[in-house]
Length: 408
Image 1 (cartoon, rainbow, N blue to C red):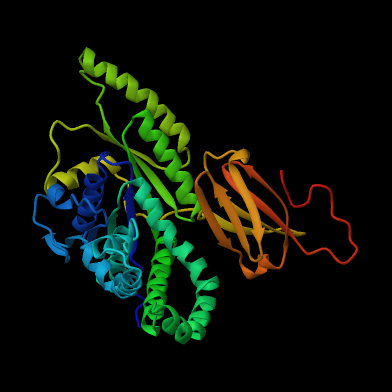
Image 2: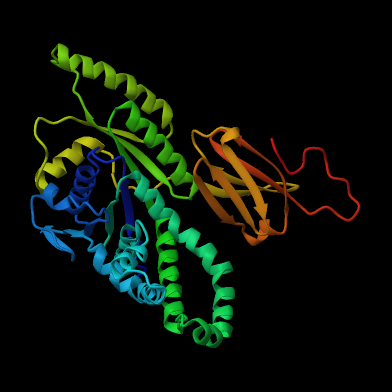
């Protein structure tokens, strides 16, 4: 039996208004023109793919050109399918507590849940064997990072809190129901939570795998560059591979009048910082156009000029942002953290977990079994990555070498 080639997944993210949807749509148009079965999927609540393609687009894949399909995910429908049972239980509890029904409805909706659950649609498509390429037009940066971090956070809850909670609820259900009149969650509620976790875990595995990557779209502005740098750091922290940066809406330098010449100079200064900030990554530039590209052909031309002969769907090269190397004394865990200094990283060990904090983001890394039995001997931030040294546990009575277990 012939092996099925894995689907190539490319996610586009960036600050709102940088042209992310246009670039994602153009990349998909180039893919389809090459004969690849291509789906471009929008998980952004403020859909704009229909505007980019100049064609009606629905909540199911809509063909806009040969091999090219577009879908603007109906996040509300997906939310109802995946969250309805859990929400129903929460509403019943709030009803007993006397909470106003309208307020209760608001309280049982997790902020950002619709965008997160839209990724479940990506999972279904990736497993369907209907597509060679899936291009994802993500929500603006902050929502994307929250969206991509959720599966791992929910995994921690499911592995540690959920089993205990399930046992306690089973034991206390008869007592609490009679004493307080509070409805206890039934097995179907727990089943719904477990199913949601399993599906999101599959999403994470897909998006952090070797055939998926994230592409950051930005405009050459100082504020936008700062956010792009933060995105690169945070995406790396959570184990997602960034395979390129797109500088969009660059003013052409030729024949510029005095007004445009000022913009060209300002953009050139930022673009120099872009080259320095993302050294080692492909950096593609797209010139500002006199008219916004609309329609499949305009989008395809934009992408062909942008990638300038390079394959926009080439598999990511090199190692991912998370790896482990062996040493004669133990092992070293490497986690890519570009633009981060030693002082900005918090590190703690909790059983078989390593807790890494960078700014407002925290990642709970479940250590591979080969590392979990070792002790942390030290850590440092060097060459854009966090390096945590592990060594064999000390034998009884062995003195701890000076500085062991401290951040270097």
